[in-house]
Length: 168
Image (cartoon, rainbow, N blue to C red):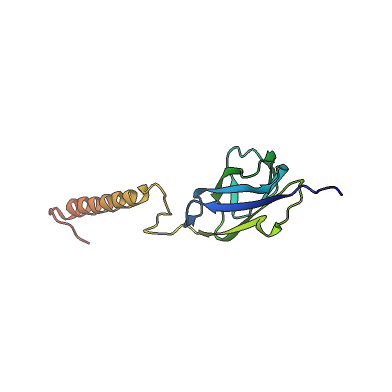
């Protein structure tokens, strides 16, 4: 009788922010765990992305359409493999990211090999004609435009009427 190697793999998925707007950059973190009892060899993590997001920067994985395939030679018993993936929200709506882990070894508990998270991406809010600005500079721009408008009205009123007052 030949023993079949067992490595109970599990995967976790998390994101750092709870509220996203179209145009926001954000990160998700995935972690593959080996709960043993043996070494997991030729480990693959598959990440399925919705069309609501795009991948940014160097991620060290193979990207084909909306699926990333990340591989690692092995994960020892009790060890974890964790990576962060940088993304950008490009479309409003409810988006779902899913991830799964597998290896060459027999996995006696496959129910923990998949994880999913939901991401709510909102359209940029319109406030005084300014789109969402994560930097916070949009509010200052609106105030500057309002001040310039009032100054123009005061100057125009003074010039036409010859009196130093403001008419609205």
